[in-house]
Structure formats: structure tokens, C-alpha cells
Image (tube, rainbow, N blue to C red; front, side, top):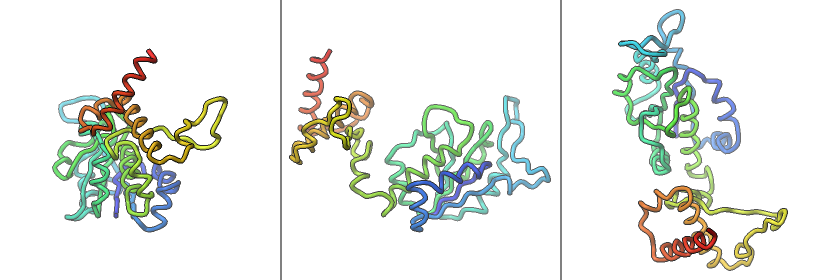
Length: 243
């Protein structure tokens, strides 16, 4: 996979690309990432990339001609072009799975008050990472890249990926490691008894509980199995008894 990022702040990616799992993936040549400075495509001596908006308003807008030149020089007909924007659908795990199957991706990072909206004519999709505003698209682009690369074959073990939050429509169940007793806070006995059927049932129940407590909307859109309905009933009874 090849990923290209158009940005005004190349230095922000230095640590990101040279740390942890992302660095290992790039070392294995499972992906290629290019960080392109949009300013290189400005055609005036001061390397201007922004201007005031027509009709007035606060802040500056990135110029469509500069960004478009950068896009044309770093993409082809097979490139899937993404624009980071708060005015877009929220990023989901399903989107990352879909994007991980692309051969070439280019991400345009907005900055200042955004980009002249005419750039949207040249993008395939816009992506938001949440209902909040950041100073630029660099952090969202890193979120997208991280989420895609870890799904690549040999990136992270498939077993680890399958147990993660959202991959099966639920939040991930709580997990523990040694010591089994820390300041009186003990690892549940069921996780230590070696009974895999009981462990599977317990983990499913805890995943359902986490989802019910923190993302009930996921349950509302999920087709529950008979086992899951029984476990949710148990959880509700337990919570009522606690209250």
C-alpha cells in the first residue's frame, strides 16, 4: 500500500512514522508513506498557500489552485483521495477495513479555516474523526493511517484484531495480566480456571456490559443472538441489584 499525505507541517510526522508498530510496518515494506509539503506547489516567491475568504469572515482559507497542483503531482487515476474535514461522516472501523484494501491513498490535510471548497470536486471522500475542531488535518490523517496500517496483513496478528472493540459490533471486554492480586483488586477467578467455554461466555458478557454502559447505540443496531439476549438480561438484573 502507498499512502501520500499533503500537509503544511511535515515535521509533525517524524515521530509518528518512526515509532512502535507503524515503524515496524514500514521497515517490513508492507507500506510506503510519502509526506508532501503543500508549500512546494505555491507559485509566488513568498510561498503563499492561503488567502482571505470571499464574502468576508474570520481567518484564512487554503488556496484551491495550490492544493490541486499538489494533488495532481502526487496521484493518478487509481489513487483514492481523502480530505480530512469536520464536515464529514465520522470515521468507523468499517471505513478503515475498506480503506485497508486500497492500493494507493492520498490524504489532504486542511489547515487555518479550511480549504477553498472547490477542492472537494477532486476528492473521493471526506473523513472526520469526531465532533470537535482541531487546528489542522494532520492529527486526523495520523489516526486514519494508524488505523489502516495495523489492519494490513502481517501488521498485527489477526487474533488480536478480531478481539478488538468494534470489530464484532461490541466494545472489547476488560483484560488483565499478572499480578493476579494487586492491592486487593483480584483478577476474576473464571479467567484463571482454564475452562475455555466459561472464559468465552464471561468475555462476551463483559463485552456486552461495556457496550451497554458506554455505547448503547451499538446494541440498538445489532442483531442479538439468543445467548447475548440472556447475558444482557443477567447484566441488567445485576445492575438493578447493585442500585
